[in-house]
Image (tube, rainbow, N blue to C red):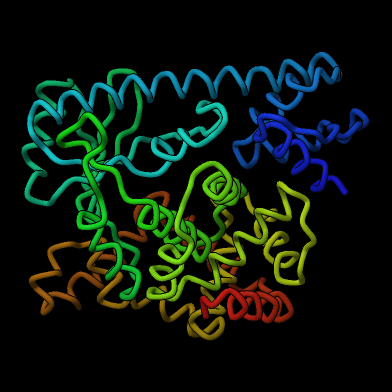
Length: 382
């Protein structure tokens, strides 16, 4: 099976001393491997595996894989430079901050450039928003782009996208309760006063929570599962502390299934019926999932097509306030903002997206809907 060869190659790239021989494939299979890995923004891992193993494939495909490696290395160098500049500036300004996501986890990979990331995500305290914004614009010459929900977006001179968060929010009360304790579960990084690092159990929880959030919105791609494998094989941790936080937020079942799938993929452990279902769902989407996957999951969560359509027309208060933060202190404006959101849909570009979603909603079969409902129940999401 092609997916088995794909994950065998990922394992070969990720493990410093891989004892297994990489697969031998024909040209057509290598082309499919390239397209699938590129779809999930992981073709550079395959290129690295080819380089490590000295496998020779057709020259044009070889060059394609090499290009993805060069792009990944460039992205890593660029983001490392920008993160260092941010660290120096925020330390000097005495602003506490916590780097998030890819900029943290890459240090656990056997080679950090293998963990690519399009953005740099940083958490600060809400009280430091304006002060940090001033540092970014006046000292680092960053371009302020927009404010959305609980984050501000900037662009660096090197065109790196920066997301500045002041709240870690998942829209699920039990999850948000744990996420709200992030500063209490973080410590200053060695040699720093204002650069903070989440403790292992908090970082692992945040990774799983963020992954689950993307999962229910269409899919999270292969990379978060690879991250899980890396976090479980490249650093020491207290499993009981991790599980306690995950169980508190209702994410333990999802986390264990994700861990099992990562072991099946990278270490070739036996699949269960659940990991097979989960694999099929993940591989059907790209790095950021698909509209169809998001629709079928949301239908399963809301209770069917009709309930889903109603939930898209009439957004609940907790969701609508993420788009319109003014609602937080002015709940009486809820009907007004509901109508305002409807008018947004008719703006150029948004109507087309809404029509595509409506078409997808009507095309979802009962069989797929039932399969997805069973999957969500098994994962503890529904």
